[in-house]
Each structure stands twice: as C-alpha cells, then as structure tokens.
Length: 223
Image 1: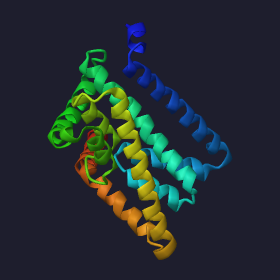
Image 2: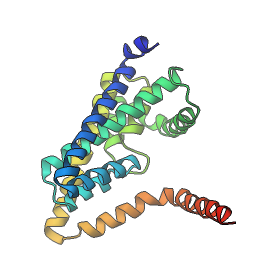
Image 3: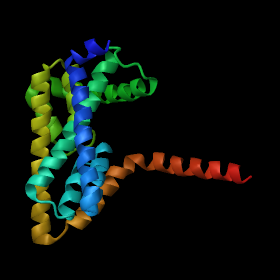
Image 4: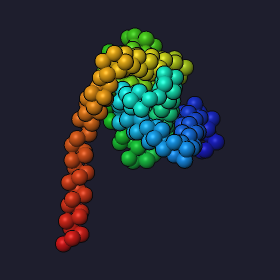
C-alpha cells in the first residue's frame, strides 16, 4: 500500500508537505537559537495561516520589520505547505487511502463548503479558481480553491497553477496595500488588530467552550 500511495500525485504531495514542514522546523529552530524574535514571528505567522488569516500573517511580517521578499516568500511558503497537506488528505480520504475517522469528518466539512461554491466557479474553470483563491473574502483561499478544482475535475496541473498563482497574487496585493498604509498613515497596527479580531470571530464559541470545559475539569478535580 505504501508503494502504491507514493506512486500517486497525492502521495508525493503529502511527502512534499512533510519535507516542507521539516525545513520550516529547522529554520525556526535556527532562529530560536540565534534570533528569538524572528522565530516567534515565524511561528505566529504559521498559526495565523492555519486558522485562515492570510492577511494577518502578512501584517505580522510587516509589523515585525520583514522586508518585501521575506514577507512574500514566507507567507507563500506556508500556504503551499498547508495546501500540500490538506489537498492530499482530502483526495486520499475520499479514495479510501486514509480512513481516520476525525480526518474523514473534517474533510467532509470542507467538501460541503466546496460544494456550496462549486456552481459559481465551475463555468469559469481555471480563471474561476484563480479569482476565488485571490479574493480576500471569507471561505476563500488556496485550500478551498484546490478542493473545488478537484471536485470540478480540473487537471492537477491546471488546479495547482490556478491555486498557487492566485495565492501569490493575493499575498503580493495584501503586502503592498499594508505597506502603503504603514508608510503613509502608520495604520498597520490598527489594521492588524482588526484582522486578528475578524479571524478569531468564527472561533469564539470553540474558545469559550474550551475555557468552560477546562474550568469544569478543574472544579471536579478540586472536589
């Protein structure tokens, strides 16, 4: 089965995700020893992207003094890493290579969200995926874009060129918008705070439940 898995595009993509993760951990580890503030920023940017905050990740880089190329490159790198894992996991779970119950439920939710957007994007094909990924709107981005591309049966090459080019374009646009506002109006800290709040809003119920559950557990232990 392992041999068969590695012969698939998704299997190799999953392997690429692990390789990119290893490189990222090595870089963070290096800066953790040599420049702790950079290491903290790299970790926070990664966390921002994992909860859907592409703009928040870019804002963090600018706020912490990253230059143009490092900001664009690192944020693009993180998006590629996340897509490698999520796209591969989605396809492999739907084709019965991966049968983890938690993973299947998570991918089923992504599949449901993708189906809601499918009809609007399918008639436009490649350009539809590109614009969807590039758009700074809720439930857009490379993860959802790549899954929609798979559902509408775009070839792997077309799907990933549209997804990655849309991602890179969005990152560049966000960077220069933030950079413009920071240089001329010094508003990046306020924008960053607003973006963080917007990103966290969908997770407020889960955060509240997590805190409540922890309090209940502590109260039971103290009794």
